[in-house]
Image (cartoon, rainbow, N blue to C red; front, side, top):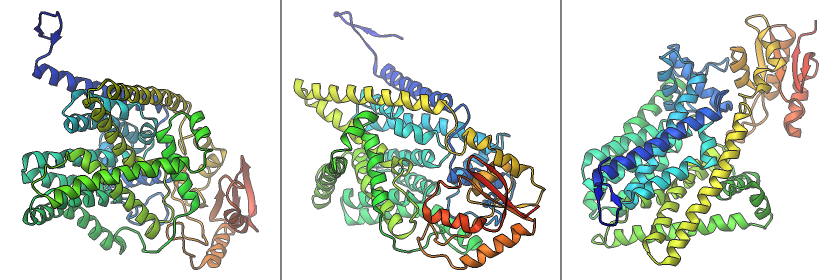
Amino acid sequence: MRCAAHNDNTFLMTPRQSLLATILILGLLAGLGTFLILDATPQGLGLSDDSIAYIAGARSLLNGNGYHAIWLASNKPVTHFPPAFSSLLALVGFSGLDPLRGTRFVNSLLFGANIFLLGCIGWRMTKSKLAGILLALLFLVNASLFRIHTAAMSEPLYIFFSLVSFLLFDYYFKSQSKRWLILTGCFVGMAYLTRYAGLALLATFLVALILLRETWRSRLSRSLIFIASALPWIAAWAVRNKLAADNATNRTLVYHPLTAENIQIGIYNFSEFLVPVEAWRRMLIKVPNLFLIILSAIALVLLIWVARKGLKKFLQPSFETPEILSFTSALYIFGYFASIISSMLLFDASTKFKPRINSPIYVSLLILLVLFIFWLWQKRAVLWRGLAAGITISVIALSVYDMSLAVAQLRKGGQGYASFVWFDSEAMAFLRALPEGTRIYSNQSGPVYLYTDRPGYVLPDLVDPVTGLQRGGYEEGVAALKQDVLSGNAVLALFKFGSESEDVQSIYIQLADGLYLAHDTRGDKIYTAFP
């Protein structure tokens, strides 16, 4: 590499060489991230019920049957899960790689891509190549976000579409070219087709257009262009669902308040993101409401900052436009959080503040952390630069420590339904040996499908976990299930019997009453007709 020599014997790269070096470093970090995902998941990505739904949906697409719930005997069109992630897995499946294995390569590449995109965001946000590299590095070594990419879920793809949307929106404001705004709308539409929470992106950019455009004419015209770019993606999926299943998103408008348990789950998971050392977190969490106070303080500071920047531009159009990437990232935290709260309150009582649900907020917080560090460094005073360096070194050191533990833990074996507990299960072997056509009623229909290649039948239940409302026909469902099992045409498979709550356990006991216990290992019980 040719460098310019100076009298002090130092060498400075030309702007072009510096640009290429930065891109190379970001590429190396992205490559390292991809390798780490593959290295930490030798037995495949972690699996949950939703993971199996995505994988089964991809297999259904590959088989030419459309996007259907083939893991269930009902085999209905899927509307609860948007199609983008399953469609991507199906696309990879055309190479001959089954979606179950394909998820590992898809999410490892997405982790690398997200590292690179965040590096570009940090670079454009601060005009500092080092800040871009720092943001990419912080994402790479963040254990919470790393674990999210090691699960066969749609969040990595959603984060990818979100980051591309932020970059395109920034390009639009820098160039004022409508094509960048149209592309932003298209990627927001693709984010919505990955997770319904993509509506938060739509709201974020609309609010930004209203606040940051100079005239009402430009505010309305640009907003309409943006909506027109995103709406076809959203509308097409809604129309498909209405035609195929007579509902738009499989959500029902029913109010159900947030539970104290869900709030505690959220506080704990955010504390895990903020304090990655388990011993320290356990000590700090004993202080009453400490993390709630910290989170509230962060939210208040960001709210004041966003309101001040946005309203000042809105009320004084001649005022300088705030930096777009940092402004929209902060605004998105509130838009996304509001969308999740709305979903929990009105549409889906089963949604919890789990790390994967919180992950888009984690990403935005990392972006704003780097902005804060850069702001301190720009003050040039020794005290402020020392503080910036101290924060940077501390965050990296703690993150690397936590990351090393995460990788070591993940490499021990598959997570969730990918664990040997499931694929070596004697109960699953028993189910695989059943005569073809035997119906399997189970409290774990997803794993039953995954390890027996047979669709499952769901159990009758008193309460719908999504709406939180009482189900009708419970007694009739129990009677029909027992009659089917006693006829010899079906079996009842109850996994982890005895480990559920009292209410759930009472249902299992009622279902099993009067049936023959044909298999019992490690708490997995299978009931059949009497021999």
